[in-house]
Length: 212
Image (cartoon, rainbow, N blue to C red):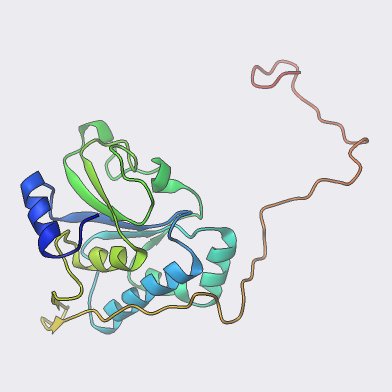
């Protein structure tokens, strides 16, 4: 692991990592719980309150339909949307490479992204060996998406807002659990009937995908 600030800056320069961050990504199943999203949204709300916009693209993959539904109910996802973040479906997405920064990843340029998923080996996120992916907490991912730079340290560094004023981000806040409890309308699961003896499964006799 590399601390933000001086050590990250030195490593980035030594390894020729692009300082400009193209994307900040939160989720999908890892580090995208209700608490994670609430803490990251507190950073996003600060940006809105302090006149900041994201310098990098910003994407959110909620950890589950229950988390997504509850976070939307409580206004958390709306905060991200006001900051022009893209709310992806609550599925794997960038975490398993179902996503791309460039249309042709094999010929894409060297670039840096920051995400909260738990793996960052080469080509993991978008199939591009030139994508340097850095793992960070959801709240730090949000802060770096706002700053747009790999060497940004939210503890010490100031940002220039839309009015030309210097501002700093405060420590994130959040809720471990939703105050009104979790809620979901569609659990995405249909229980099997207790007695399946009368159920008939029909398969196309010409299929080459299923054994008949």
